[in-house]
Image 1 (cartoon, rainbow, N blue to C red):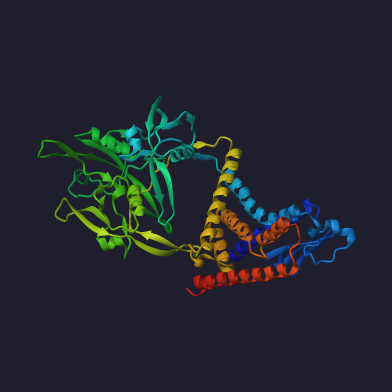
Image 2 (spheres, one colour):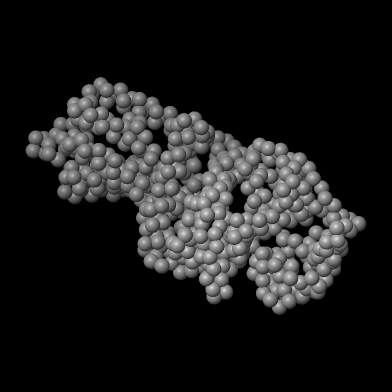
Length: 551
């Protein structure tokens, strides 16, 4: 199947590109002598109205042959009006530009049908509120449904998030539906630079809410704590407190604060059960009574300890050889602070690490002591930069900390899409624009020497991409076609002779100077273009060999 995916990928991209040239030429009345899809021995040949339609045995390219395409072509006088070079500059520009344009437009259709298949989107309902966040200070609660922001109605989480994102450091009036009542409050998004471990960054506004609730899954550190004495373990999912259901960690923490004596809990404990050749995770329902411990400080203040913490902050896995392992972190440790600041969210913790990738951080964590209780440990660590090869064979530099948790967000509320056609059209347009901008930025970085030349790939890379995306399913495969189509369209627009971009430059010069470019100049440009193209091809083949054959 990998060969089929590869041939389908290349065949579609080539066909779209050449059909762009072909359609523009026919629409302008220019005679098309031949439309060839593929090279090598002819499999199909058909002549209709003076145009030869040809399908070659090797679907790795194609071309459109126009009457009078070369100024030196001998065109009969009675057919001169049909010749390419007898047409005005603007028509020639359209024909040449139509090929890359077709590749840039095709993703619009792919994304349109992709988004048209969506029937629901995340609702503008708060799943959870992070501690010490602008949202918490403004009084937002889990379950609040956002009705409007600054008087503008919102229906989806995407719309709410986009408005908050664009109003960093500006007070926003948020109107909410809560328990059948309408509530309004003001919240000021913090300006925040969101970073990824791949190195990309984007500035945005954040208020500290999540659409998906953070599940009330607990972690138990001390074996002698009230929670441990009641039989609770790390990973248990609390579903009710004293008969009242809970669906997020924020709600659970609030309910625990209300009960200072005996706390009846119902919870689910995940276990693995073998079914045939696979293990599936099942949950056993259990009950527990937690009796909190009371502590009196020297100043007379009382505190209540249940021994329950969010499983979010417990280390589930430590990568061998990572900075986390060298620092001494172990599975089951509870991460408490970074550079002296308490950890209130794993997302914030991860973002704090990424915000200063080259800094030496001080990490503090707690660990259960063999004799009971817990001990506090700390160490200084610096993250590592590693080159990681993904499933497509691309090498990417990533920032490595090395400690992972096992904490997944729950499912947020969904709402039906109103006007699916308009929704699909709008998202297809914006997705295509973002893709073109990102690919153009990648080309610019490569040409400026800011991106490594090792990222350039050839036919083997294309084969690998087609194979992996095809095996993931048709959605992945079509989205990959859209991405590569944008790459092909922009690549052909580069001002390199032989490519469409080089022809566009020639025609533009001809239009500006109002005279035909001299044959010797054309020939010299052709030689330069061939040298550049051959150099790019050799670089791509070299990278393919090093990446996939000689690794």
